[in-house]
Picture 1 (cartoon, rainbow, N blue to C red):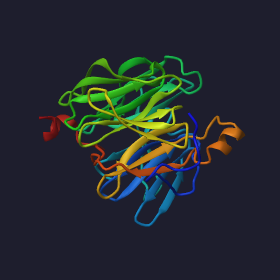
Picture 2 (cartoon, rainbow, N blue to C red):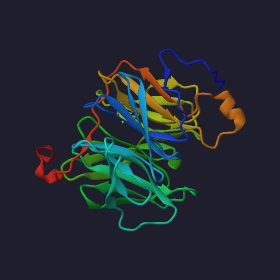
Picture 3 (tube, rainbow, N blue to C red):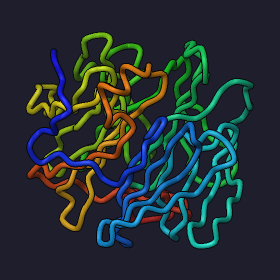
Picture 4 (cartoon, helix red, strand yellow):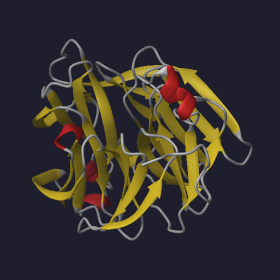
Length: 306
């Protein structure tokens, strides 16, 4: 389908930065700001909508995803370990490691469940061979492998009641739903929620307060809202081919922020898509949910596990 440089009604560019591979947007409702990463730059970025200020912190290596924590720092998924980042001091402290560090692998998508466990997936950085692993992190130390044979881990998200977990291995061109035990942090077997048409594949997702899943469809110029049963409810057509992830933010959690990519694009493609790599936003008329925070207190010791 043809695409123009005109923005759909209500869609706007935020800031003037161009990401190589923008990803992992998360809204911090305590501080009223949006964090996201540029995996390839690599950097963590922060937008303060009240002032329009954008801060950037270079990272020492590829940064796959980030998560909020209950004590204010960010979890940062670097290629060989998960670190804690303090945006006030700029300090980075190693925190947890996979059982085995595999050369050529890095972490990709990550998300906390509603009880404060951090889930994240690994992948081969270049070949996308089915060598990645989906991990769960309950606390400091070692990451616990849960699923293996993953190509590109994406779309980690949880239903409002925390009893459904969403996940996609993008090269399967399907978004999966899993029954989830919030007390034990266990995911059930996958069931196909929705399929995409190649070359479009499911990238990052967000869930709204009605339980609908918003998915950035990479290579497909769009964000799709799915019902919990997998019905296409709404499509936001974009002026960029490669949206990567989305997140609800703003004071009322009604603004959908969308990260995008510009990597591996030709000069002609970049000329045709001047917003490739931009951070986009649109008021979608439905509220999102507060982003879960990683809990340093073990889940078993909190009332959230009851």
